[in-house]
Image 1 (cartoon, rainbow, N blue to C red):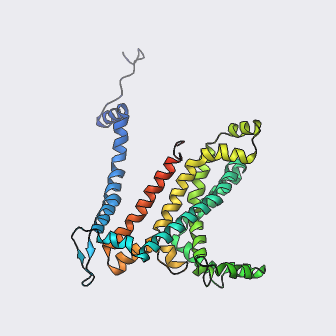
Image 2: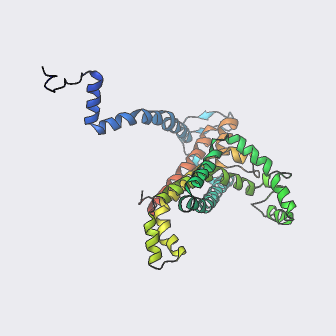
Image 3: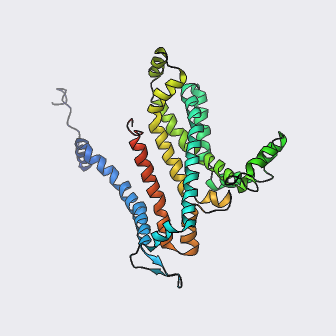
Length: 316
């Protein structure tokens, strides 16, 4: 009778439907329910192990027995900040991280700008694939490939010789603090590899930020008589600053903590990542390794504070 009257029966209930309705009516609880598993994993597997490592920095190591003395002390930190060799490692790593970040931003911005503003849809897809494909290749394969490219008999040296510019290369390699016996054994070669490895992490955030810049703003700037340089400084860069900040955090932090590239390519000399690996895995000085591990954390925190005060995150 009810079906003939056009009244359909109510859909069947059940525990699953009731639970779905419960979540639908409580979106905040639903969001928290989704976030709890990854946050628990992050807190246990990453933050927990990091905290366990950093707590080792308040201990010291007995120089005669090489055993860890589990008595709270600041001796390890005193050793870190008073020994010139340790300060030299921090300064060398920080200088390389800053140079890599600036170079990556300088190279990535015009590439991202062309991808977003001038490339056709098909060319833009090609650009994105070209940026992403190197990230799918094995990290070690890329580093060892660059070691062969930068070797004394590698393709770059051959190219300089082919164009008659080997004198310029030799002069560059003779510069103190930059050069070495070859590109593969110099800080310049290490810098080239770092920039290549982290460049996609700078291009993608800048491209995403440029995508959000309305074309009408650029047209309005031109209509008001602004030159391209003025538009870049006054309109584009302030709006793209969050993307630049995000990309720079990637390049800066990854350079600070990397120990593989300095171990394979570049001049002799420890970096922070190498020192942590050496002290923990070889020397067994876990307190000093933990103290060195704290240095990149402090530097990243200071960098984030700086870019936040400059307003880099205001447009996010």
